[in-house]
Image (cartoon, rainbow, N blue to C red; front, side, top):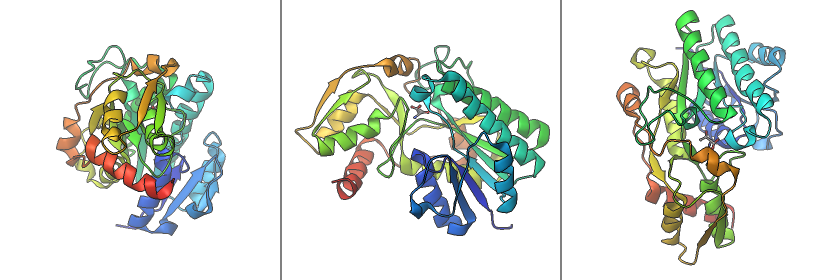
Length: 314
Ligand code: AKB
């Protein structure tokens, strides 16, 4: 097998930063090209500026760097997406179509497409949401990801593109900050607890959502991309789960380490988005097809987050 040459879009995002670093540990720094529309810190070199809507530039980069795999992370998330639905649809869906078309044309080895639990909505069972259910997403972000999944499935079935996808829950990590998502509170709360000793949450206290520690999300992504393709039975998004908790529950967990920590609640428009989501996810197909198993729960994640953040932000 020849060594992969990887391109990451959205490499300066919450997941992109950590995934870029991890893939470089696995394949070597020069084998992983970071791209983003936002300026990146120097440490992320090699880097190319890329507006995902510029299909011609994307093609040039793929040709110039002899790319064989793409991790396509560039997207606008759920809360930010609601401020500009048409732009969000354009970036999230047309960006993906350019990637899939390029993968077909250049016979790329593999493509990764991050989907989300936001593809679910009011038509899905909220507890242990099964893999295959009617999808009626409530946001343009969810709509673009649900439609993106269909395109991935189509490019695989019609053209044999080896595209793989995960429905990420809310991702929590100390290495980077999320931007514009509904689950962002679960990262902000740690920063606020350590710096201010208090946090005002934009969701209601009992809003339970599926979440995952960054280490598990990165491991899932790399594992899915490495597994033999004959094991994969799904070419749209695989359900993926680790833990579920509410703002009240994570605050109680943080209080075990910072007893004076206080949380108050001031729900905003993001509460209406969160209300349409699943509380927990059935990821048995991932466990069966590619032996997915998370390592972190709420308690071990909290210990690890506080440990790393104490060293990096205080
Ligand atoms: C968001 O909140 O928009 C994302 C997601 C769950 O896809 N974190």
